[in-house]
Image 1 (cartoon, rainbow, N blue to C red):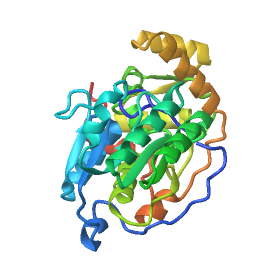
Image 2: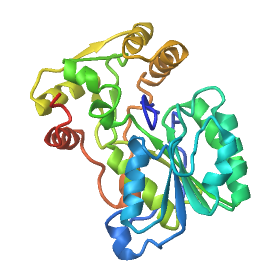
Image 3: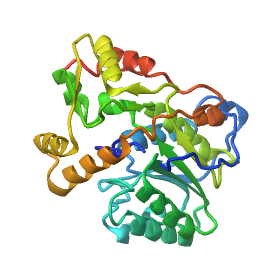
Image 4: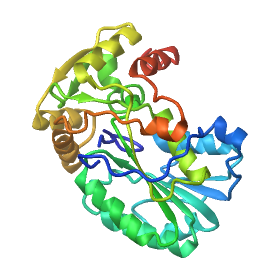
Amino acid sequence: MFTATGPRKSGAMTKNTTHTTYTKKGAAGAAAQEGARVMGTVLVTSGTGKTGRRVAERLAALGVPVRAGSRAGEVPFDWQDESGWAAALDGAEAAYVAYYPDLAVPGAAGAMAAFGRVAAASGLRRVVLLSGRGEPQAAVAEEALRGACGEAGLTVVRSAFFAQNFSEGALLDSVLGGELVFPAGSTAEPFLDIDDLADVVVAALTEDGHAGAVYELTGPRSLTFEEAAAELGRAAGRPVRYVPVSGPAYAEVLEGFGVFGPEAGFLAELFATLLDGHNSATTDDVKRVLGREAKEFTAFTREAARDGAWHG
């Protein structure tokens, strides 16, 4: 998949982790009516990214004070500058953690352990971590954060490939150009709408019963990238053709889009590892948490087209 702010991942263990407690209440609708408690400030890291922005908007709609963590924020937060983390966490009760560029990169586990120690020292009570399905190195980073969090209850949200990568992410230009170039072969992926992910994250931040849980979030149906391209084309009103390529060839494609050197190689290798079919199965974790089905990919394409995603 792709990262929270730019290129992001798919991803988490090759089998489902045992889930702990679930809640049936939705985040933005039922939670407000049933009484998701009004809580203290929530730090939303990568607060201007695809997931962080949606989480922040939903929390604000519930009346929860939000501190959007970004390098340009009022209280700056930068994953590459640990010196500012304590100030960003000061007075916060909970945090949504979306690590950039990816939990699978070298050094991510160390960053998670360091963040966990600062979070524990600040008295943080809840932490929700965005992770990926089928990423062994991401699982190592999860454990590093879990071990350092102390009394803060950790919830891990492992996401399938974001549907929005086609409408506002790194694959948007490919859709607009009519050729979806990607190293996925004929593998099927249960694309997840980020709105569903954001609702689950907000539920975990504002409702009881999620501490210790590991949720693997997918859409309700797995599609090959060829099938996804066909649906994208129908919704966009323009032909979109899937062009499978090898990992090294995709690294060259990424360089053409301005992703250079180690990052391009890392992403190409990550996709080659993940898109081998072991993440193709769907789960019902969105429904378990929110009490409703995950959004269909077809519904996502129609909504994105209605909102003008592919008018370029």
